[in-house]
Amino acid sequence: MELKRVVVTGIGALTPLGNNLNDYWNGLVNGVSGADAITLFDASKFKTKFACEVKNFDPTQFMDRKEARKIDRFTQLAIVASDEAMADAGLSKENVNPDRTGVIFGSGIGGLITFQNEVMEFAKGDGTPRFNPFFIPKMILDIAAGHISMRHNLRGPNFAVVSACASSTNGIMEAYNLLRLGKADILLSGGSEAVISEAGVGGFNAMKAMSERNDDPKTASRPYDKDRDGFVMGEAAGILVLEELEHALARGAKIYCEIAGAGATADAHHITAPHPEGLGAKNVMIAALKDAGMQPEDIDYINTHGTSTPLGDIAEIKAIGEVFGEHAYKLNISSTKSMTGHCLGAAGVIEAIACIMALKHGIVPPTINHFTDDPELDSKLNFTFNKAQTRPIRAALSNTFGFGGHNAAIIVKHYE
Image 1 (tube, rainbow, N blue to C red):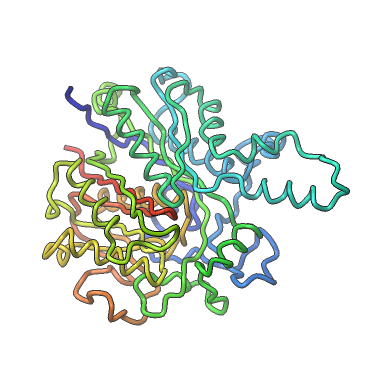
Image 2 (image 1 turned 90 degrees about the vertical axis):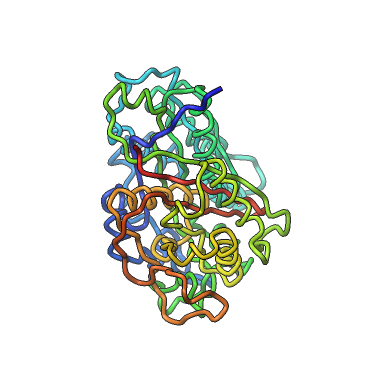
């Protein structure tokens, strides 16, 4: 069976750098930090008092107040991103075949804010079970995919993917494979996350995973810097409209790029720490290249997982060196988490979007907040420190790794 080709025909993005695709991209190329003091709750007693929030977001600009109250913030973000992606692709309820159009959507945690608030409210009482009837439908991780399908009348394949911080990349991979097999014509795929809350920040603080650089939050996310001290939590939503090529051509769709290949592996090592030699990361990049029928020399840019954790950054760079050999020195490498923070289950899709826009514009977004070289990292590699760089990009690879040892990678290339 000959596999079908899959292209990207629409994009939607809400991120700490902007509430639409253009603002997000402008923030990336200009090296803007999305980190600031937390406003979503009182963080004064927490070890970390800052995060990369989506700013100036009012869901009632996009839906009525009654509807907004019935859904968690992670779903609100997802719905708005889906609206932008559908419009960008020139799609509507009137011009899609609903039975051949679906949603594959990821989140690492889902409705944590709803879960936290409901349980805290219950704990204040006398033990009588009084819960909001929307508690469960607001919380469950798959509900964002469900709401997107209902909003746009999409009756094709519809489910959620969860693999911690690799969730949205795995979701894109699942959608890509379904389209290659002819199971649908169009699939909206991506992810959202919104866990900047007492439970989210407190939980990651307890793991000692997050930066505590409260005196300088703008520069706290420092991938590959010697003085990095953990990730900065972010929130975001991103959606790609993935479309079977012949279907896209038949309707005259604009095409951003082609999905060339994807891979998924496991570290099988530790619940949170990466394999020290980057074995899972190495294998997932090899798998993506093999799936794409490409050689390491065909890649010009890698958007790394690069969370700004001491162990993770080193393991991934070791893996890149092993996979790409001498060609690694001709690559541009950058971690856009230096600007967006780590958006957990939404990280993969917003970083895939960064790769797609880099292809389109021939600009590599930077790794900001670099001050001191880390002697454990190869200083001859081009980490695109502090300033965007212009170069032709034929193909780009995006890595995302999640707690539990989940690894996912996708490759995008120019459509020809």
